[in-house]
Length: 260
Image 1 (cartoon, one colour):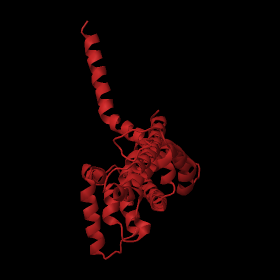
Image 2 (cartoon, helix red, strand yellow; image 1 turned 135 degrees about the vertical axis):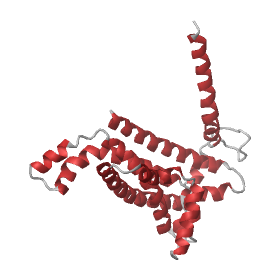
Image 3 (cartoon, helix red, strand yellow; image 1 turned 90 degrees about the horizontal axis):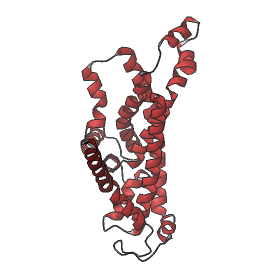
Image 4 (tube, one colour; image 1 turned 90 degrees about the vertical axis):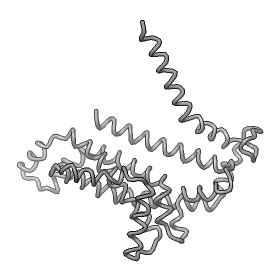
């Protein structure tokens, strides 16, 4: 008898949480189609700001920079993170080692950014797109490793031993046996890493140089909103949000298929 009121209360609570989380996002999306230049006044539906957005050369250039940085950092971190996951599963490391590997996922971005900037200053590395790529790779490796390791929990190692017993080399075994099995986890990790890299702002802001090639998309957006939120900023945010949601959804879908 008491289960029904409790269920209704939990449903209402869940609804309020959804409103709190996604209400501002829906408002942002709606304002991106606002014909008026003022974000607080609705004067009709318009795609004007999306058209102006694609005419902004600074935004187009920053998107290209972010795509390039995210793609390169994703490739490097996916390779290193996958090999790291394989090594950890083989050696079964201690808790301290596990904590050190997971630390970049827990450490606040501002701490990570300051430490990377200090390190680059210590070794006298000139800042630019290459320093941003290295910085993104540094924190993405942990995420890639964590995702790929979930795949190894469902991995039957006896097939590796069988492959070697049948005369296959270690490289052939990895290419023909191990990699096809863990491929869904690797793809999911790469998608997650790409999303994190494309959306990263704090680390990019601290480790980028004066060159325009190191100005990422989030940094350009920050420069645009310093003097107020305009409809074209809402349009940019809407596009980024949709792309990010799609990549995260795709990553979660692949992870779910892997766990199944």
